Image 1: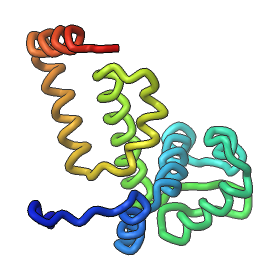
Image 2 (image 1 turned 180 degrees about the vertical axis):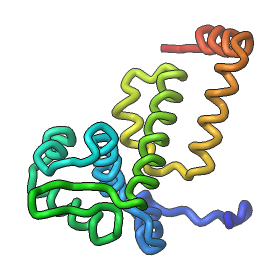
Image 3 (image 1 turned 30 degrees about the vertical axis):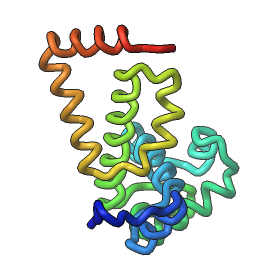
Image 4 (image 1 turned 180 degrees about the horizontal axis):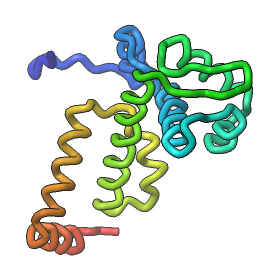
Length: 161
């Protein structure tokens, strides 16, 4: 719990190490799992070559990360280079994709000039509760167009760019 009188600050790497010790996936592993999930939703499997192209990395990098994800129980691979999700992989991948879509939609909503890049940079640091709250906020504005219009007018009048 955060002590408001004596907060403990850490570097980004410090928080990453704490998360790793708690068994959470690294940002890079999340990216590989999310992209694998996207491919499996479409085709029920993924391949190293396709992941390599989509993530703009070398096939050897994909192979290493896929091996780690398989070791952690998210994926299963066969000797024909077919990568499939386990039940844990499907569940986690769905969350990762939903988180990505929610963050990107929020960033578009507030006028980000590069929502995909910003999403990729910040999505990993958000807790499931924060993602849920962002999703709720977006739904609130969708269901309340009058308030949305007021917010957009406020943003336009306060935009200093």
